[in-house]
Every structure is written in structure tokens, then in C-alpha cells.
Image 1 (tube, helix red, strand yellow):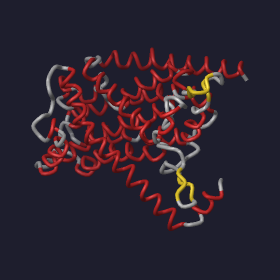
Image 2 (cartoon, rainbow, N blue to C red):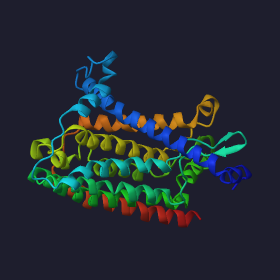
Image 3 (cartoon, one colour):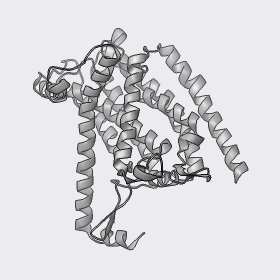
Image 4 (tube, rainbow, N blue to C red):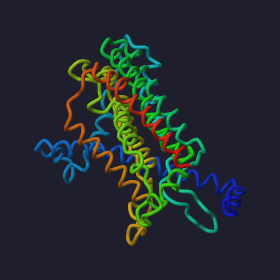
Amino acid sequence: MTPEMLSLSNSPGLFVGIMLVKILVVFGVTMLIVAYATWCERKVIGHMQTRLGPMRTGWHGLLQPIADGIKLFFKEDLVPSESTKVPFLLAPMMILVPALITVAVIPFGPDLSVGGFLIPQQITDLNVGVLYILAFAGLGIYGIVLAGWASNSKYSLLGGVRASAQMISYELAAGVSIIAVFMLAETLSLREIVALQQQDLWGICSFVPNWYIFTQPLAFCLFIVTGLAEINRTPFDMPEAESELVSGFCTEYSSMKYALFFMAEYANMIVIAAIAATLFLGGWSAPLNIGIFTMIPGFVWLLLKIFSMMFFFMWLRATFPRVRYDQLMRMGWKVLLPLALANVVITGLVVVIVQ
């Protein structure tokens, strides 16, 4: 630990103030992205389907998220008489809160030197940051299952059961797929993983960083597919399949409680994109270590990578139809999990041979 960090730790008031500022900034930026991701998805899919998307509210519909928020806030809030009231009300928050908490360990830039203090551009750096993300990401499923059960509706219950089976099937493959990254980095700290990816590519190309997507392309593809399935994005949106379950686990919800489910979905999109960018795409580091690339702030590169991944997710939604549930389960257990395990074994052999 550097002397600057020691002096910052010995100033409790300053430390708490900086932490609060970082929390407010990260939370504000995340919620802003969540709000305008809804507008962006409608515009992206609209143009891909030869239509305009939102155009009436503001220039090119830029005020549409604000209009949607006002509408949902003042819309009548209905609670089914047969529902179990307390779990029914808690379920939307149980889905959104874990998605927001996981952003705390994502590094979004190098350390800043301000007033003689070294301030990390990260809310907190845990030496088991990836395990922290996996733990909290898995808590969101409890909210979905609780929403389906507490609604006392067959459609909602089926959506909750589907979500739990889907989470179990794909979370295992997602966890195994990123083990290969830990084997190469020999750490679970996201900050250290980003630092290791700034080295020269294979020690021979000085201006190209050693992003793990070059050495673990299969792990990257597996993580993206399993991540989409975990957050119930098309083509894996079986828990809320409109053609079968009306709206799945959130069928009986209205007003802001209904909005919280979609806020959680887009927050989870940000989390999956941020984890993929951090583990495989160098995090906040530039794609080339030369010239103007190194002059652009790190958080700009991270945001660009996150937005690119989210655009890819929206592109998939406009391209692929929803898979059948038996195909979903078969692919998770018989294709993705064996591939993830094989990748770990091969990576282990290569690491042992090279060392």
C-alpha cells in the first residue's frame, strides 16, 4: 500500500466523503444508462425492422424514457386480492438491488492523484471481486421466483419455475467458463485482471495489449451466451414468453413495480457487459497502446465497450426467435457446460506445459 493510500485511510472523514461521491456517481450513471437503454433498444430494433421507433417525444424521441417514467409512476398500482402481499411487494426490489450492488467492484479507470491522495476509480477493490459478482448475480433469481409464487397465478408461477431452472442450468456454465481467465491471471481481483491485460500481446507486440479474448475466445463466447440466458434476454426469455405465459413472472404487476423488473433487466445487461469487458476486453484500457488511444480517459473506453456489448445484445433480440424450452435446457447441459469444462482442462494443460 502506497503512502498516499495510507494517508487517505487515516482520514476517515475524507475517505467516507470520497466513497459517497463515487457511489453517487456510479449509481447515477448506471441509472441514466438504464433509462436510455430502453430508448436505444427501441430505436435500434426499429431501424433494423425498417421503422423509426420513438419519434414524438423530444428530438428523435429522446424524452421517451422520461415520459415512460412519469406514466408508470402515476399509473394505478394494482395488487391482486389473492396474492401474498409482502413477498409480492418485495420481489421487484429483490431483483433490482443485486444488479446495482454488483457494479461496486467494477474498475472504471486507473488511480487518480488528487491533492496528494491516490484515489482508485472503483467503489471497492475486493480480492475475490469475481466471486462477489457471481454471488450477488445469483440472488436476483430469488426475486423472480418470489414474484411468480406470490402472484398466486399459474402463468406467473410457471414463469418463476422456468427462471429458476434456467438460472441453475446456465449459471453453472457461466461460472466454469470464466475459470480459465482466473487460471491465466492467478487472481480474482478485477483490478489486477485489468492490469495484467495491459501487458504486451504474448510479449512480442508492444502496442497491442494482451486481452484475454485473444487467448480465451471460447470462454468469451460461452460467457456471453450464458450471461444472456441468466438475465432472460431474447432468445432465452422463456420466463416471460408472451405467446405462452402472457408476461410470465411479472404478469400481475403494474405501475412502478412493473417498471422495476425492466430496470433490473437493463441493469443486468450493464453488469454482464461490464464483466465481459473487464475479464476479456481489457476493462478500461485502450485497444492500442500508442498515440491518441492512450490519451482518452479509461472510463470512456470502458463505457464504449459496455455500449458495444449492449448494442450486440439488442441486435440479437432483433435477429433470433425465441428458442423452445427443451432446446434451452439441452443446450445448457449438453453443449455449453461440456464446452466450458473442456476449455478449463485444455487451459490447465497449456498453463502447466508453458510454466
